[in-house]
Image 1: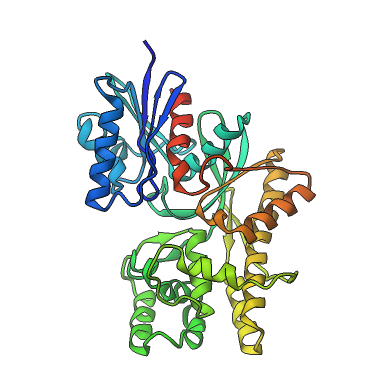
Image 2 (image 1 turned 180 degrees about the vertical axis):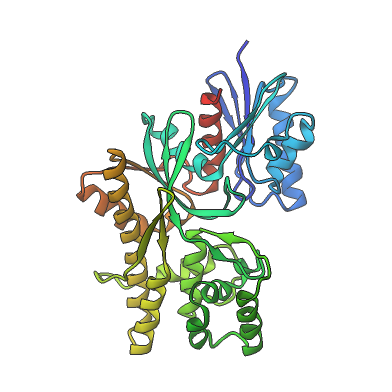
Length: 373
């Protein structure tokens, strides 16, 4: 009898996956599992697809607050305790052994890159770049600007964007000006004219205080900050509003870029984006058109990817690269990165049949869980 595997997927843009041996059945593309109606449809869909069969393996995200993870915890409460057991530092995944089903927690960005490996039938190891808004990291922080070495059974984090504070936590998603203030501090204030001074002073004081707040390495939050700084999206009413507006603003034919800094800490490269934002401020003071500044920002982000991968290629000897995560829905960024890497003789792969956003997470979970012992 064929082994049954359930990959629970992510929370936004969810699509679960059920495998019976090599037969794969993908669930419908859902929006946000936080909505009760959508979550009910998700649970009903899984139970309907499973029928009377019981999965031998269940793969889910490491994020303890994801509704997809909660579903697994509710369905198999005696088994789904992986989040309490810590995380193996070299692979980022935790498997609870024992009676069926076996629960496997798969780190979010590992799943993104694994989906590309599965889709293109690549032979690991592969260098992966996973840029998005939010993903639970193995250190308990919010990841989203990750350079990974993905092997057959695990991954290593080789580089990432320096952590930035998230003043107000998830409020930074709908008020991206908070991230501009987090990255730049007081230097951002003169350019945030649409934000009430009282709110600016409050958040500035919060950032200077010892108040605990979440930390993020997210590339998506950096795009939010840049959009807020250019006043194209100070407050967001829908997902990715700022990054979309920022990409539309880009002027074609701009070759210039902004500088960035990188340091090595405990064998890992940490990328400091602050010089990029200081360069934007300097151009804004000079009256450089916003369309040019937007293009230079995008060019800088592409240059960061390329420069970091060149260093990692020298370090690892690898030249196969997988790009995934919602930020790579940005065509300007994705095409520029791909073109520059291919000019340097890298082999570049990204999601084509699968979505490049969280719609591919279940497929990555499936790939990882099949190779997890």
